[in-house]
Length: 381
Image (cartoon, rainbow, N blue to C red):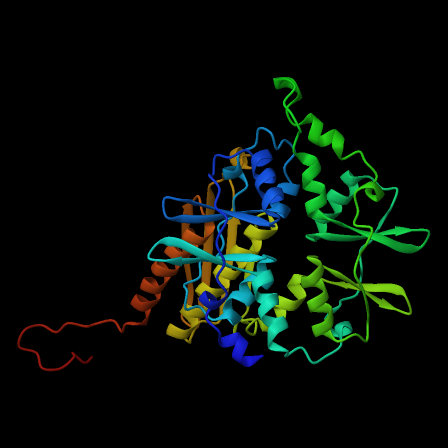
């Protein structure tokens, strides 16, 4: 396992699926469906973006919504990045792929599937599958509508819902099956754009679900379960105890095995006003923690860090928002405050880190006292 963690991501590199940012979400759905993939990348002006199925689930009008309005900007990997670091990022942000960039060009991607394939070949999963499952399995009833399933997936940030019928799990509904309903089959007039996709969600989940789910006994070897998932082309396996479904494993559970230890701040760190979007919130939180971590190494005297993110009320409902970020750094000599504004939170924190480092450096320097010409020592009273 340790050898795999040190592996460079270029060894697992796959061809990235790239779409124009001005594609409608309906068109993106078609691309994802045809290529049987979970995400696609955008690449414009040197910036690598990503659109995932979970992002699409939030869209109410896919026929008129542009991909550019839902694109996220994940961390970029270099070909030499260790797999452990990539796995950590994918785990934290609940992603199934990350872009690999070299010389400002998008040259590839590392995906959850490529990681799982390498894990399966390694033969290093010497434990029972039950150790990967977590409690609180979220289910849905077979008579529930697809609209309810979508809301659950968005709220809980999940892509799989076991479907219960007569107190037994009879199938599994995936986010991929739902987004295929969102794209209108044909345009029947400007007033009906997006309406067909919404009405398609008024279908019972039993008519959509995968009726041949993989079942794995809790005592089954994890390696066997992984190989079966890959062989069947599925992104989950139900875990059973005495034929009763008790849990589920997904690609994230396997990727997490290779993730480097989660960085924990050495000092109290507080952040208020995170964006509602889960991806942006996680990215912002991670960025601030990294900034404070770097500052702490340079200035060990830092005792505490706080950040408040504000959005003007006039921009609260807009897709693109301007943020104002306040940061306060507590040291034995007092509190250092700085405020910066901009459109992208990661860029704001990068700028704040530079300014705060400069301010802390100035505070660290001893004040100079200059003597009059001819004096050899400080004046004494």
